[in-house]
Image (cartoon, rainbow, N blue to C red; front, side, top):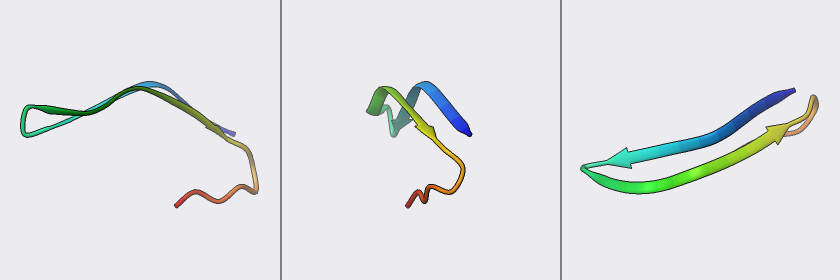
Length: 31
């Protein structure tokens, strides 16, 4: 299992996303 919590991304001083969380279980595909 892979789990990410409360991710934040900024590019060129602009917020692209904030508060992103997700879980990926074994055998699931992510693109």
